[in-house]
Length: 163
Length: 117
Image (cartoon, rainbow over all chains, first blue to last red; front, side):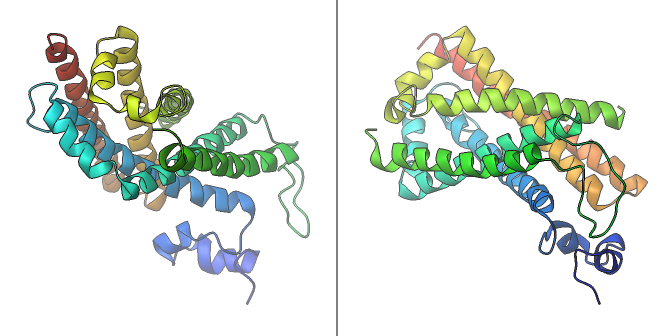
């Protein structure tokens, strides 16, 4: 039986989709681009969930779901819930995943329009994708590096910096 | 709407969101001190600026259209039956309308009622 990344593994595990959502989301045994694919979707869903929560907490500026206008007491109430160490940890994670999702998303847009791929070539052993160029790999690495830098900056602002 | 056009919308909203979210994050602690940026007075003054209001509404629409269209794309990858596709497409539209509506309500209340504050 072959490993999950080769043609036999693809036939048994992925192409037949017998593993369902686990097979779709699990990138183990595949190349960096497959990991990027999974990260992009997981971070995308995470960011959307945060945005929906953010819609809810910012609505307390006008008194919440049944509010009628700007309310200082309502804003102080929600700030008391989200502005603490746990809330700030969540914000650092949000900055991490938002930055990764954004930079990796730019890579995907460039790839979609064929701007960072090499010329297509016939597939031959050991079946490495020949269309992937250095720019494409650097962009994925840059997405991870910039996300970490942004998260460190967010950490400094929220936990160390002069608020 | 054709799937190619929906993907184009996904890329356009993505590009817009990258710029708008980056600016939004920079306003929270880099360009403006974090404590000031989230104070009631600073938020209220943001809703009195036309540029800021247009910025927030554009950010709201770009992020939510991109987000729910993204979920729609993920769900289409999981399963491709006709009924599933129709429910997913309809659900994405409803989710976008409801969430953009709720966010716009916050902005409108802050602008219209906050203007007299």
